[in-house]
Amino acid sequence: MNVWGVSTKDVVRLVRAGLIAAGAELAGLALMATAAWLLLKAAEQPPLASLTVAIVAVRTLALLRGGLRYAERLAGHEVVLRYLGALRTRVYTALLPHRVSRHSGGDLVTRLVSDVDAVQDAILRCLLPAGVAAFVGAVSTAVALVLSPVAGLVLAFGLLVTGAGLPWLCVRITRAAAAESAPARADLAERSVELITGRRELIAYGVHESTVDAAHTAVDALAVRDRATANRTSLLTATGMLVQLLTCVVIALTAGVSAPLTAALALGALAVFELVLPLTAAAQRWVEVRTSAERVRALLTEPSPARGSAVPEPGHLRLEGVSVVFGGRAPALDGVDLDLPPGKRVGILGPSGAGKTTLLNVLLGSVAPTSGQASLNGRALDEYDSALLPSVVSGALADAHVFHTTVRENLLLAKPGAADAELLAACSTAGFDLPLDREVGSDGDALSGGQRQRLILARAVLSAPPILVLDEPVEGLDPEHGDAVLADVLAATRGTVVLVTHRESQVAGFDEVLRLG
Ligand SMILES: Nc1ncnc2c1ncn2[C@@H]1O[C@H](COP(=O)(O)OP(=O)(O)OP(=O)(O)O)[C@@H](O)[C@H]1O
Image 1: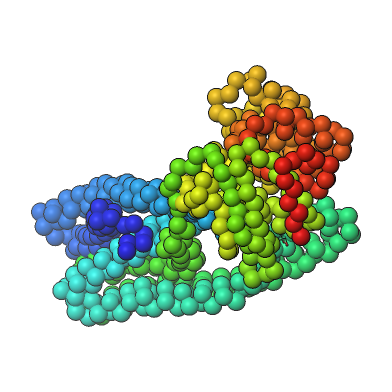
Image 2: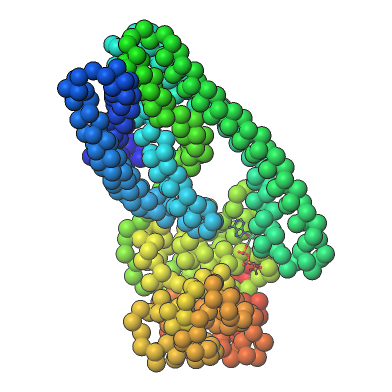
């Protein structure tokens, strides 16, 4: 299977970009060598006619190098941006089926943005330069071997040391350093998240200063390690430059050809090294991008959970002997039966941790039973298209997301195109009285806890699904106000209702009350 989705066209485009880049570099190299030859030859004061070809070549090569460099930038970026656009879509599509269960928000962003960007670096900063350097290095060595076998051998040796030996050492050093500092980096990341998200609590309990100090210590320790690694890799870069210099000097001393040709060989060699020297830094970047590329590959090769395609219709929802076990712990739900014909109202009661929210998640199809069956109209819930299931079963859950926009936009999610009057009617039923144009902040930060809850409730009222599930929808309100809001919501609801609550009085008059725990 072609995990990376690289088409033949992509390969052709990449090779084309590589060849143009190699052409630009070879033109630069030839320019340097010809100019060096021309200068020394001119010093011998030969007839001008014997220099004409070289003079024209210098001008042509200078123009050619500029033109090809420009074309190479265009071709290289075109292939990479085109490919990355497609890759990002594939990563997004692969992430979707796992979004609820597997990855945190930060992890999703990292996979979608940074990891895919790293693949761009792998192509533009590592693979392409390495390919071009190998090609140009081979061509220049071949030319040098023809002009002076000794110079050719010296150049080949120097290029191998700089283009292969030093990058290999750099990979080893960087890998070892990354492995050594990984626990310290993870520790620092954890401390940083604690400092940001738990700042208020750390201050309240008087440990903010000490936590900041501990984070500083972790940063300092990491900085010391990073400096040590940077020193070692800088030493490799310096070694590369030394090899470059020595190669040129040895070529100049041992080439055994005329002075102008020796100058051309030595300066040409100097120019080839300019292409090969950056490979040490590219090798360092390669180590970093490999981790990201591995993550992208793991995601693309991960089998997607089976996804149903049946179209759900309103009707009879049923749980039969449903158990849910999270990661080898005690069951969150244990053999629950629940029969929900159209129009039935069921209250779910139980102490904290009894599995009430888990039960609602099973009804919504977002948690699959570990054993037993959850079915709609006789078909297992996972046979239905999960994107369509909310049109039949949805409601107000405590962890529902509130989008960083206005009240109106948040409500319109539930019923796109609804008129303001309809939105206001739903708000009034849910006891939510803020203006529709009010910005609610990131995840409802600019609302009080109770307002946030009622906005979520208003959204549920507006969507009016045939089966409405409500998870302690008025828990944050004072009991009297909460009861009144709930009574209004229930009065406005025609279909099936499943209400999770801690207050027995709220389910008085319901068709069934299920006690968990
Ligand atoms: N995603 C999850 N991963 C692991 N354990 C979970 C997960 N969701 C719930 N649990 C565990 O399952 C049990 C039931 O949780 P659930 O949220 O359903 O209880 P609850 O009755 O709704 O509690 P509360 O009234 O406090 O909201 C708890 O022990 C909880 O720790």
